[in-house]
Length: 185
Image: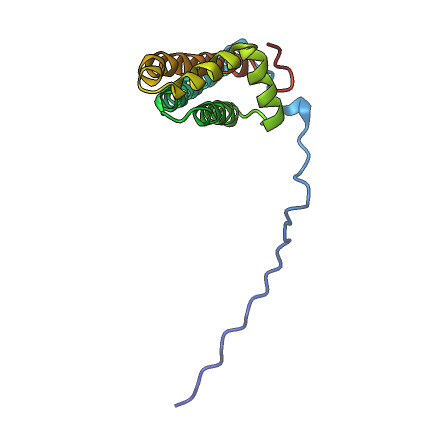
């Protein structure tokens, strides 16, 4: 058997286009003029996109607010529980750290830079002379039997309410775009 010769190979030369090469120029005069219907359609698309973005932003704000309220309730309940503890002075320290943690969690939720020193200063400014009253109620727990029974429940309610109020103030401040740097009690 004789082998047939292989067909000749065709050589095709194609220009290669590269990503960095420019596309062919288009003559602006050859493009059609936009019609009023095109601009109306474009305006409708832009307004629909703006409404969708606004709705998305509102959903995000609602989620953020619900999350902040959950954080606030959690810390207020823990502070109230700490107010019931029969450990004078230690309960006041625990409440202070819970309030500091509350501000930290809220600032993280709202994307605000957190500084421990500034948060402590803000809490002190908000509470003013109230800390001394909380310390006195904590010291009254030293009075045997009657002291703890008389002071613990009102102190727990007061501490929980104060923590809740501090959280509400910071929620409002952060929602308006404030930071710990521009907080003014």
